[in-house]
Image (tube, rainbow, N blue to C red; front, side):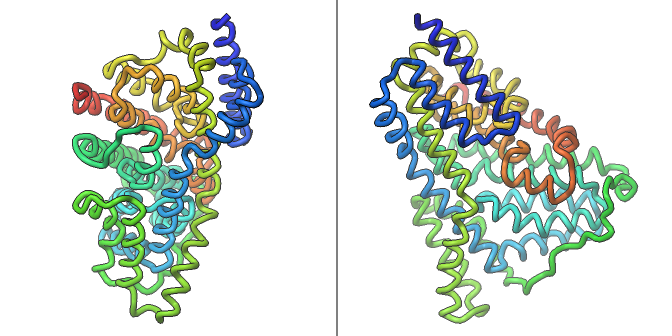
Length: 432
């Protein structure tokens, strides 16, 4: 009986994956999956509404709060002009050399997104970085992934991503040896983006490669530069957590106050107070979708961890899912790239929440290692999946088709996942 129940659960899971790939709302589809799983497994309606929907819906509320503070800090960096000043200064050093410009934008974007978070932050940087690349003749299908891969590289050690996923992977700490691997993973992704740029721009004749008319493209009008000493602010939260061992929310509050203090001459006291309030309000539209996904995925994880669902799925998934660190490295290295696109089954904040629930229930792979080996596919989804908010905006802004974007970017993304899976196993596979 459990076998047929498991088959029905698997069919429901695959149907939801297909519907999401075909363009249906992930939020609606995942909510349906959580309720459907519980119902198929024979859980009563009273337990569904109490234990799955209610308890699951609030399970990761603290993760949403961390996302809010990360988006707030990003808005402060944007509206004080610090983020814009950092990226313009870096691009000026690159000069009129398209390949160097592309590599510089990837690197600086990665550094900014070690602490910045949200689609608003991505757009604010993108409206500066993308026109600069296009104005130098870099083809749009190259400029787009060069930018989004920079965002992805930064999220390897992004404080918001760590703070939210810490709720899904209990026992994580922002420290070595795992942090050491996350930094290495970030560097590998930057190198993958540089390889992409070199592959397409190595001959220097970029203007003849451009696929759209870029004559009218120009960078957004530059604002007054903030002083060079303000450039420490984007990485200040990371420093505070590593050196002072502060918690994430207090770290962001202090960093926000530092950003305002270092740009004090630019506005009056009342102006600072107004900006403090405004940036907090402006942060919420940035995180609406991801907050909804976290809420719904809490329901899926709770449903997947119920004895009824877990017991029915285990016989089916046991031969497929990894049971040792080596198996996990092979599993994620081979499938983590392609199965993360269009919110496929490797996306934790998506249908992958179901797989996570099953793997966690097995208690066979150390949780910090599981997070680390799953991180590269997670990062790839956040920087290459056309259904992801800032990737979708970038594709639209550069007028690149989904197919052309993936054809350019995905091979290098899959290479990054494979290389990082091997490195993760070599660095962390023997730790318990």
